[in-house]
Length: 551
Image (cartoon, rainbow, N blue to C red; front, side, top):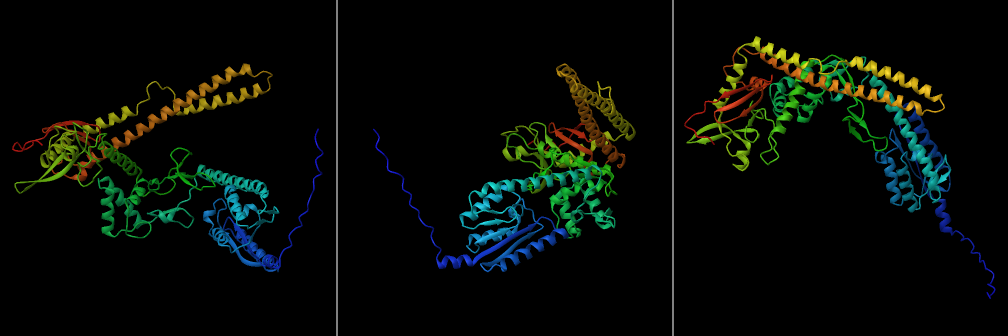
């Protein structure tokens, strides 16, 4: 049998009366305010000034408060606290114990990033510092306020994302209509005209032309840099100090041939503001013939091909085994073009001294760096006989310009011949896809009014399959056409070089030879294979001195 439990006894502990010191401290509460506007527009700046005036008045007229400061950021994003200098200054003073309370108009004015809002209000709560959000009537010192702050912070962040989406849509619409925002400060050769259009700046344009000409003649970016600085030519910033990265940008900028490519980069999201290179994640918009060109389109295309060619040369000289790092060098025409037939590594020019006599020779990089470990039998070639052999091969291909030009034209026509097995043009495919789209929409309307849509499934599947097949054929045609265009530009470049030369080359000229050659392969001490840019291959004997043994 259970004993009767005694009745619960409740003891009331009276509230502690505030001491005089605590009351005095409360009367002298050190108060700060934070306000922010996100743009520099005149209307927003007026609001910014109004906020500062409002909080100054509010704090100064309260006898129990002491003004610390009105912290304010103008024209700053609310999605990232790291860009708001006054906000961070306010947080530092809170950590230093200089602020007792913060006033803010709303959660969205404090921050538009939910994570930042919670992190900072939690830190301030741990320091005993409340943030009063006036519009929402929230005091962050209370733990239960976190839920309300999270809700309002999420709304603020969503609003930023919606704004970002609208801005992005507006920018994409401007891209589709052919509008472009040009950064003239970093663009050599152009200036902003009275109506905002791109106007050629003659003196700077000559520098751009010189850069393109030097690059096509075989010079490296470093040698072009040194040449420009020696001549005292100025870059877009107005200085005479050039960089190879700046030159690479100039050589690859489509604006110099009159076009503008939009959306080369994009911002990943409105929170991180991270700028990402567009490698296919988003569409790009090429606006052709947007303005007057400084560089002819054919010359611009030739430079892009040459840049790809040099990259390929560098890649070819890098082997899976450690046979040298190899890189393009424009000092000699054969640098990066002369390769070992045994191991595939690039040859390198070296100067040997023998019996007090200096001797320029070309040697497999692998043999130079690692002996016979990776390449056992590659020969050493004296420079002068090697050059004569290359000239002989070039002259043999140039013996009749008319015949060679006809051969090149035939090659071009073969490359541009109709695609085997493809009877439809791109226009035919687009029209067929559009017609199938209409059929799909009509069938969708028909199926929506039917009681059982299962019977329409096979018809939907047939239309979708047909559309996918047409899209695949379209992509295939576009890929082949792109390859054809590259071959056409390559052949045209070869014809252009040939037309500019005399019937025979009698002296070695690094610039001319470089423009003619695609590759030279060392087959043996007495034989090389010369591949010209037009695709012609010639095996040529090398008359090496008999008194010198092979390396």
